[in-house]
Image 1: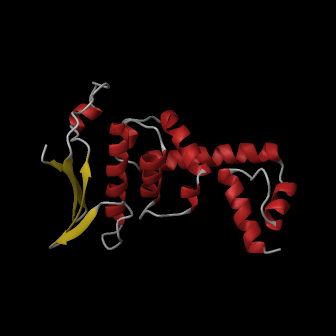
Image 2 (image 1 turned 90 degrees about the vertical axis):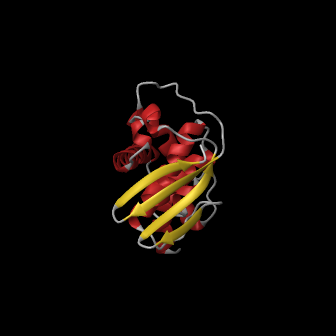
Length: 191
């Protein structure tokens, strides 16, 4: 048996659980030597910690979703193959990709998650390619911009205000996220 594979199976079990039917000798070894009751407790703690890290580092989505509301999405993310693929420039962007592509969240939450992911990605790397399909990324002097067609324009005052039932009018607009130095700005054009 391969010790590195055993380690990978064990780590995966800590976040995603164990397979019902082991597909390798390493999986069979780990499954046979784990206490499933203790694994459930450990997995729940790790997923809650992941949720806390994501929630605390977010700039937008955490203003609409409490930690309790975010938890089911993080649980589904940890069980998914997307959790292990690292397509984004940051962990938040990885989670945002999952949130947009694989959840039944509202269109407003999905757009906030998309902006959240790009915001996070641009905040750490202006050189890395965007992982989002149909996004354009370019530089204008010292500024880096990323844009995409959004299904509607968001009024952040209304989204984050006390009017919780805010639903923007459906109209394709261009969302541009601009990094200038350490500042990042979001604008909707064509609204």
